[in-house]
Image 1 (cartoon, rainbow, N blue to C red):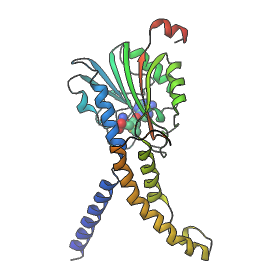
Image 2: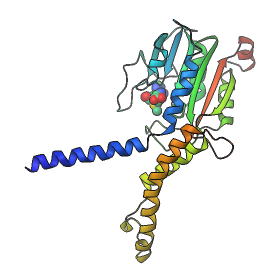
Image 3: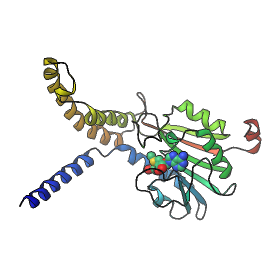
Amino acid sequence: MAGSCTIYTNMKFTAVEKLKERWLENSSRVYLEQWNEKFAKLVKKDEYVLDAGAGVAPYRHLFSFANYETADFEKLDKIHQPSTYICDLKSIPVEDERFHYIVFNQTMEHLPDPIAVLKEFRRILKPEGKIICTCPLFYEEHEQPYDFYRYTQFAHRYLFEEAAMEIESIEWMEGYFGTVGYQMECVYKYLPVKPAKFPIGILGWIVAPILIFVRYTSFILAGLFYRLDTRIRYTDSGMPKNYVVIAKKSSTSDAKKYNV
Ligand SMILES: C[S@@+](CC[C@H](N)C(=O)[O-])C[C@H]1O[C@@H](n2cnc3c(N)ncnc32)[C@H](O)[C@@H]1O
């Protein structure tokens, strides 16, 4: 009897968690898919594409018509798609100029030496080869201990130019509503609501109901802002959660100029 009660409670718990997850489905996933889909349209059949730092390779389906390969160091305790190359991105075991395109999503912040990796990308890209790089400006620490930086648009420009890559565009990936949604989600996830968590006596008991109200309101608002962001990509003020960079391998003469 106790067993079936536990199963029922667990099922209820899982269903509630699933509902919460669905409500907080973040708009970045939608935009990541859209930007990568647009990039995939540049690729011709049988051209070579590397997904660098592929993880579970969530955009593999967009490149199924091409020669799609993946590289990842697979050091984290998480599920990976088996990588074509298990390696550090600083040293990818392929010949020079193998790839027409590189897909580089949500990975640059995890690299201690991003310039070395961008130079390696330059080596393995064909002349005029292109890269899509999406990378957070505003996001909590994740995949620890391999989480090193957050990048402004100026940092992107600096790093790509240091590696003799020509920037074609730097844009906000989502709109500001996506960033607000994420901030609200963090409030919901992390705001302490138990008076015992802040030892300030009676004040704790006064503050606690306010924090509970803010926390649960933030849950509702997070889902609303994520949905709003998928409909209106507002970029006139605020800050992006991620930037998306499209860059091209510049000519050999440029590389000499940059000492690459
Ligand atoms: C946040 S995940 C992104 C995965 C995937 N690109 C995506 O968009 O979902 C970052 C990935 O980069 C890989 N990674 C981090 N540092 C790396 C390094 N120095 N060399 C190779 N892979 C690395 C991690 O194993 C992880 O799979």
